[in-house]
Image 1 (cartoon, one colour):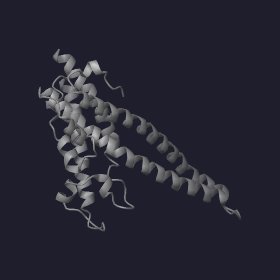
Image 2 (tube, rainbow, N blue to C red):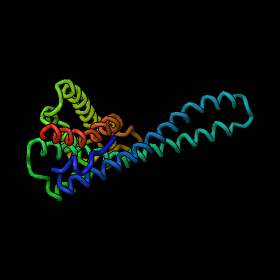
Image 3 (spheres, helix red, strand yellow):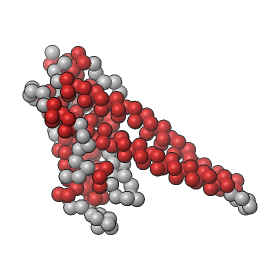
Image 4 (tube, rainbow, N blue to C red):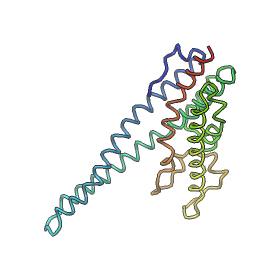
Length: 225
């Protein structure tokens, strides 16, 4: 995903542009690492069956044991990459939507303090609020088909956020959270031990949304003339 040049985003303040650019390139780099780690994991999950077949009836089964250990280590690494990736991607999403909304509305740039605050991992409520901004209000320069397609993707994301609220309220958890408690929480801080990552259904879709937002802003500015 290409990040627009400074001249294409001339109406952004230095803080808005620099933080968005930094988050964009950080996300892009870690996304490549994430993709590589998942490819390795997919391959390793396919190997144990083969190894167990070769080790079947054997007196020594080092092949199966070693591959199993490597697979577990790869799982831990992929999980760690995702945990590093989530704050970056979610902050990029929230800040990008905030900047897009203020540009489309013709408002003054966000203050440096607000930009810095939005560059941190958002709470679940902040993410929900950003994704709830009406798509037509952000994509006024796009055609109706593009807007409708984006609206559908946004509704799917909001449904997944609701799923996160439900996951955190699961009575089987050692410390389930009320909706109010979950709303003010950062996902990296409340991720239940031993459970699937809360951001599992959100991460890839937010990468696409966040990476596209600066280009949408640049397109709006070009169309506005």
